[in-house]
Length: 172
Image 1 (spheres, rainbow, N blue to C red):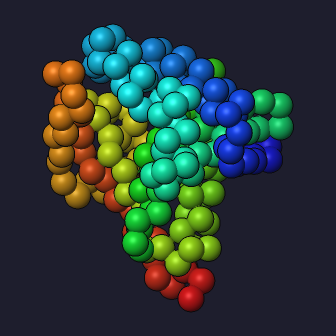
Image 2 (image 1 turned 180 degrees about the vertical axis):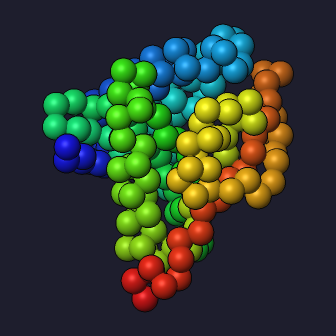
């Protein structure tokens, strides 16, 4: 199966991502955080206006994860010095466990190689054990913990995970 990762640029594409985000967050995170925090975070970080601001003013890039038939998820990254910050990585429930994460990981590693970046790093909720296991399987290691106040009485209680992209693999 050939995967594509088209970059998201238009308002229509941003609206599609926002809708996909809301569906995934409401389905997946309800066992980890409260529905009130989910709704707050969707509005603050994954609404059309929030995504547009991230793309146009904060240096984030959004990509669809697309198989031959449809959009199965999305990614968001931001280049920071010699590292790539993986801000968002979500796959719809019906498409999980089908190899999309592996192909998306390869896409991210190639982005790093193309840009001569040495690491990919991310934050993941410390109670999101299934996702932590997936990242560990892909070569990420927990490097520290972080608790961030996101407003409205909510915090993000996360592990910071990082994967080194070997220098010998980077196009120098």
